Length: 317
Image (cartoon, rainbow, N blue to C red; front, side):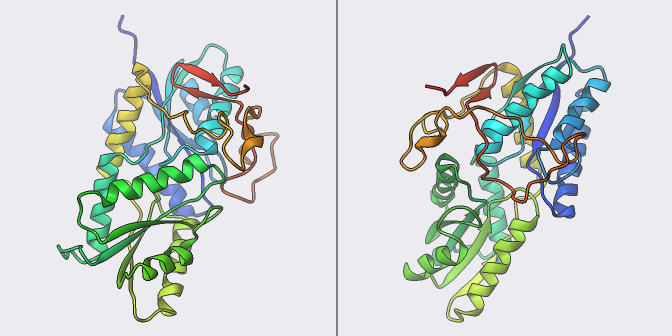
């Protein structure tokens, strides 16, 4: 008898925006349609139903004993490094006999860079010459320097070979520069045409805030043309990439970066995070845990260990 392939568990961050949460749930359903041979479920760490634990229970109810978890996140910050692995470890205790592997975040994959380029073209009305266009790529922002650096990496990769005047970087929360400061920088560098590009997968509160802040800045700087691009969205490239990350996790072919992990390396100003104990992240919708989180990210959870594929890195040194 052929052993069935591991199921796919898609882990999302969560949002207070109903449309954004439904976009995630619809995306999970589409992945399931693409791979009818796989049990597929998805859940959130916080803010939105269903909780990740409910998604695991759904798979277990279908007879699943092995699964691969893929974080549907662009960068590896606290959620991908600690909260999701801790939640998965908790689910293993709740459901004896299950096993799992853990995939890596999506990262600035060439397929997603192509989608970002398409969003820029849409915002510019299909105009071919980009030599006078400066792009401001706006990430979520984190208290994890490694995660913020990943957004800068995406900006540089987006700039390479595409003919833009430049690609600058900003964040909508928790990290500098913020959106107005990022636009100020573009203007000081001589930009007259700017496209603000949100580095987000789906719609939500924070992408809406990016657009609002960009529009407010543009209203106060009439001499500079500012356009806003759309989020990445549930494009075929994103679906393909999630399945690629699934295959990596199943095969154990993971190349997650630990060289600048704030929970392993003493980075200036963040020395207190080294070796912090890992704790599960309780979703407010789970039984017995009625407390919600008034923030989307950046909280001081411990991440003393984080699980990369088939092994765990200990950071308590």
